[in-house]
Length: 440
Image 1: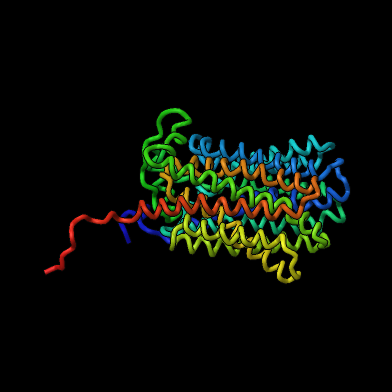
Image 2 (image 1 turned 90 degrees about the vertical axis):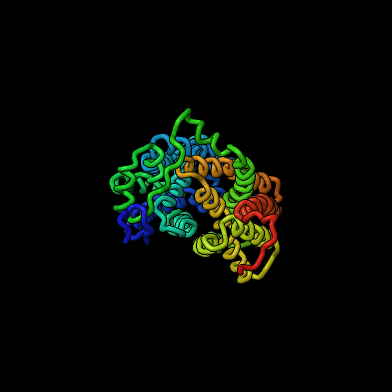
């Protein structure tokens, strides 16, 4: 064993506590995010709050707009005040905002609640990704991020069962009261979650970081550039030298990916019900989609650690586009179930591997900002996706929804594929001009 336990390779056993706490936080994030799509068919059928399909799309957009604000702010704020404090604050915010939704007397108040929830949701995810990247075992960063993101889809599955078991007897408001429950988790998170190692190193608190790295049996991140300048310094570093080219490929790839993720997450039960499925069957698609997401995260994480996250993401997006387009074709029920599951396998992990690409490739000091802004730029797509679905349904063109979402998958394939090619060129040794001669 090395004489410096903080710097030696580790299996990350004690660090499972950190990963587990982040996993639970993201589980609640997924529940809060997916609950709206799961209860939406009930709300439309009951005309709850006087909601129309067009307004439903707008409300989905409010949450994702809040996520845009939260994601863009989270990286910079986390790199300034610490990732632990931000995670605790985000969980508290989206939990309280769900209470606003449960009590809302009008569509406007409901929209405010979803916007506030979105800010918390958007801030939590990139911060949690940065946190588990710090505490991941060596060579397993992408797999650890994939494992973390299984929680998001476990939350989606939980939202479907909340809609099946609670909404029918108690009404749609009860579902949002369930989403207030994570408030009980806030004191646990505040007590047991350690601070990010990258944050401590970037802040010059090396001794504290070394102590935590030894305690949790993980490697200490390499010291990067010192944190100086204004709060925009971290963002400016994403465009230094040749980094701007990669940054401007990651952002539109994330836009298309999150348009697809949140468009499908919001409208899948409603679109499937429009295809003639009963509500129970439509919610089964939500379960299958998120089960596929869990399986896909684990497969993509292992594959990305071996072959590279950008390459895996590009292939996954291409397969996603094909799967989403197939959902617009009438197929036997069993085949439709299979396509929904496989689409979930590829779609959800394709977007996550964009985050893994950015997190692994960023310097420790700028990691939360890089992931946050990549996620934030993608949130424009997350705003547009639910709105687009609502407009198509309002115009009685719901059958075009899957085609539109498939085109978003194609665009992400192109952008992240270009990023993968650039990464491959940058890591390939340049050929020598001198002829090789055999050794004597």
